[in-house]
Structure formats: C-alpha cells, structure tokens
Image (cartoon, rainbow, N blue to C red; front, side, top):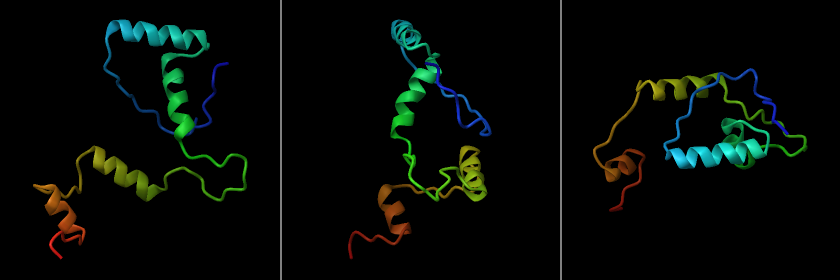
Length: 100
C-alpha cells in the first residue's frame, strides 16, 4: 500500500519533527503496519487536506508558478522582507487602521 509520489518533478525538502524516542518508535510502528515509511505515513495525513480536484475538470494546476516559487525561496532566504515592530504596525501598513 505504499504511496507513490505524483510530484516526482518537484524539488524535495527536508522536514524535521521533534518528538521523543518513544513517539518516534510508535510512529514507525504505525507506518510499518501500513507498509509505509515514516515520511509517507505523516504526509498521508497532510495530503488529505491539500487542495485537489477530485476528478473534476479543474483548470488549476495546484503547482506554484515561477513568481510564487521565487517569492517563497526569497522568503526562506530572508530576502525582500518587510518587518514590523508590532502587529498594529503591520495592519496599518496594509491600510487597516484600528482608529478609523
């Protein structure tokens, strides 16, 4: 019942999860019971919530375009970020004024 990735063209990144050794062993046991790796087992839960077309004639690719990929990469690298000292300052920068 091993799930094959339909995203073989996407760059893989590493995700780290902090847990106790006992939790890790238990998760590994659950994954093994489903004939999956730990990664496949945990991703199966997330994939249930990810957008999908469900067989309908969806015109969306659900794959980020080049601009989105660039912005996400820049954000991960700390480039072109605007920082605010407070949440109120952030909302005000977006044009939401609490005192209006």
